[in-house]
Image (cartoon, rainbow over all chains, first blue to last red; front, side, top):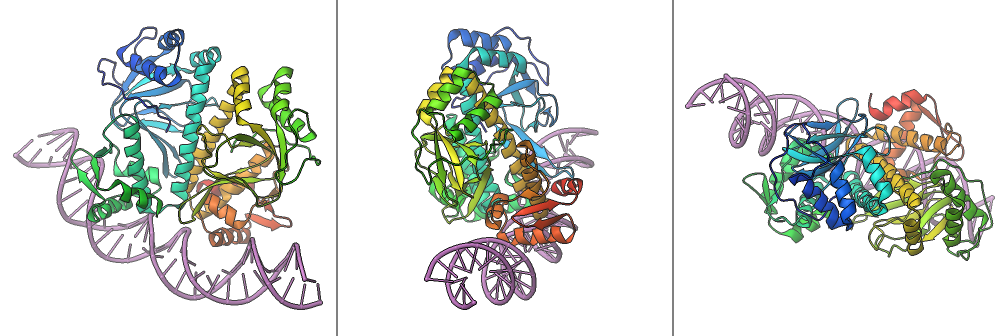
Length: 253
Length: 253
DNA sequence: CCGCCGCCATGACATGGATCAAAGAATAAA
DNA sequence: TTTATTCTTTGATCCATGTCATGGCGGCGG
């Protein structure tokens, strides 16, 4: 969903699985997030210092629930490394993943007092935490940050509308092609290799993101492979043979 | 999409079909929108005066395109009366309606320079126009307005996620029930009668909103009627027989 | 009043994707 | 290394919903 055109260098020394560093000092990981904010919002030194003061860093294994739907919304998160999925459930367990969050993306923003969705790690992940109260105070103080957050929300909204078009009107093949294209574009915006594109999530996750079943996702992948549109590489990588082909297939043209 | 808990009184003397009133004076219709903003953002007298200065009012017949996908995004709109639909198209004409806008709702906000969707009137509609440049200047000047707009965008985002769950994972019957429930809730929030709920849009529009065909929408309505969950009244009204039933049906419980 | 046209309903049939089942691959555990 | 365990692929079948076709109803213009 919201993402920011900046790639993080890898960092290592944050705590693992929910233990957070004490606030108030600039951490290698924190520094990355702060740098992101600088790039995007052109923050002043003073704003940066204040942001660095309030953020904490956390690290989780794959498959860890960061927060659940309905939990009190006390923290805003920013992904430093890894992939996070956010989803909603129906009472009988049907699941819709509404977004995959990559490094640079924020999540956990809520206007209400509780989260409207569950957030779970797909890979090992490190996160920056911004306590909500302190973040809100900061936003009041620095309208420029508020503005930046608003612009991120608008972008997410546009992405959500694209996703509605996909879910409501595209065929399975179009959905998969759109998905690969999206991953490729996001990789490019973050300055990564766009072509053999890295697909870190399972077939089940892809299915729940696209409104399909794992079987259909799997079959469609092999179908695309057979018709030489893509090829599947080692390490969850997908090679796109002809980008223009894929673009056409994604829109049924 | 974003809506504001306030019902407009009817007003009459704005221009018809695209002709706009001159800016700079408070118009009966404008006054309504300004009042809305007051209620929601607790604006100061000064802020109100400035808002009133920049807004214009317009009126359109049913079936009129307010703006198209890709048009330069120069205006923010607020619905004063009537219903507007916003939608995206695929190259072959498949359509996804991403929202119905009722009195009090804003639309036409864009972070880019062009609109990401088409907006078209469903019924005769009157609108308030806020020229983008002047609106942005105003937002810079009054962070409180910016904040309110952000909170609206966040609400819309939450609604969009609900809609993704609906489009990706609900059955036709669940979709229709959720839709009726949504209309009922929105009517209630705007202080209108919630039970015989007014459904101003055509079967085709409902279908394109829910990712179905008109035939399926029609069949599902009769099915719900036959099983005594709803009954269809005069004047595009739908009577909900048992709200709790409908709530369960909407989630497959 | 009549005839046209756009919406809505309903029936018959087709099909894309779901479901059910089971056999490989990959990964983790022992 | 062997054995669980989980993920992926593939096949066979089914069904919810789409597609196509037809008739009714209501509004509007002539």
